[in-house]
Image 1: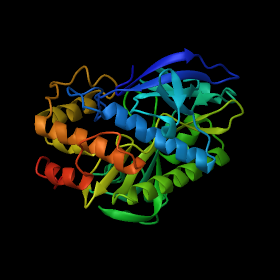
Image 2 (image 1 turned 180 degrees about the vertical axis):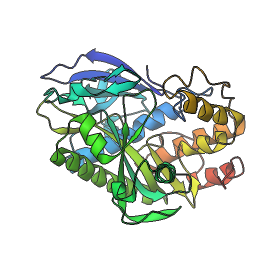
Image 3 (image 1 turned 90 degrees about the vertical axis):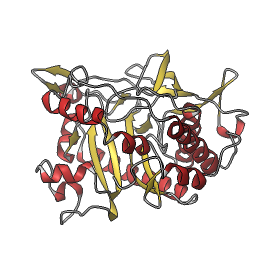
Image 4 (image 1 turned 30 degrees about the horizontal axis):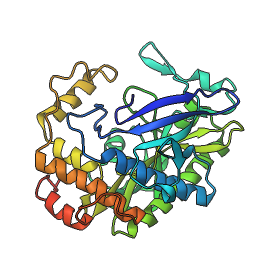
Amino acid sequence: MGSVKDLKILKNPTFEKPGEGIFTFSNRYSIFDWGGMPDHIDHKGKSIALLGAYFFEKLDELGISNHYMGLMENGDAKNLSELNNPSKVMKVKLLRVITPKFENNQYDYNIYSQNLKGNFLIPLEIIYRNVLPEGSSVFKRLNESEIIPEDLGLKNPPVPNQKLKKPLIDFSTKLEVTDRYLRPLEAQEISSLSEEELDELKDVTTIINKMISQEFSKIGLKNEDGKIEFGYGPKRQLMVVDVLGTLDECRFTFNDLPVSKEITRMYYRDTEWHCATEEAKKKDRINWKDNCALQPKPLPPKLKNLISQVYCSCTNEITGKEWFKDVMSLKEILKDIKGEIPCDK
């Protein structure tokens, strides 16, 4: 069980062949690496599964390899066009997940240098950034000299809310307890990728970013940033895995108002609980959650309902089909949300 979706293994992957599994997308959500938050968002699981399927089928049209096999209905894996009702269950190909050892308070990625060939998850999250909002982690990392502008492909330091002519490609860990940002060279080294393979990751991410941006621009939304996960198939061909293009994987805005999981981040960011998580992470990056002094409180009921409406409406409008009935238009919902969160943060 993951923080927001569950996995049932039907067939284990081997060195030679991918396995098969079932993702069940839940109504849970996670922010700030906490894991499952107190609330469940109605219809979220189905809306994420449908939207994810929509973008996987777009990848198929582009000829980009991925692990999607269809959404389940009456025991069969179906494409969206064949589906009669919303489904939260997706059939996927499975790759080997090779977890780095944790020794002496650090992760050891040496196993990735041992000629793994193919059929495994790359232990990275690849992040594209089209805009750098004021609260972006990029500014904190620059200020603390963790990175320099050249690491991000920039000649000069960026400024808050800068719209980038060329998207930045960023990297973080995938299999550690708490996500850790990486410089490109470190990302390449821990994954034992060649320069050509790293360039391919960047190139495919750029293509996917452009496709997602074009799709969301049709309903008036800006694609500010998002994450993609990859693995290698049996012949070491690059393969998109997990899910992409959803409100959990990307950050979208409409007139600077978030249309994504960022809504919940904005609500919780000024709470005592969030302050407690930050303090706990400073003391112990690995076991911080066990040592956090506070637990998150539930969302206000009105905001929780509006967030559910955002997920449903966005899926309806992007896919062009009314999967969820009696849902307001996205723009109407966002007008109501604006009064429920601190939009100046």
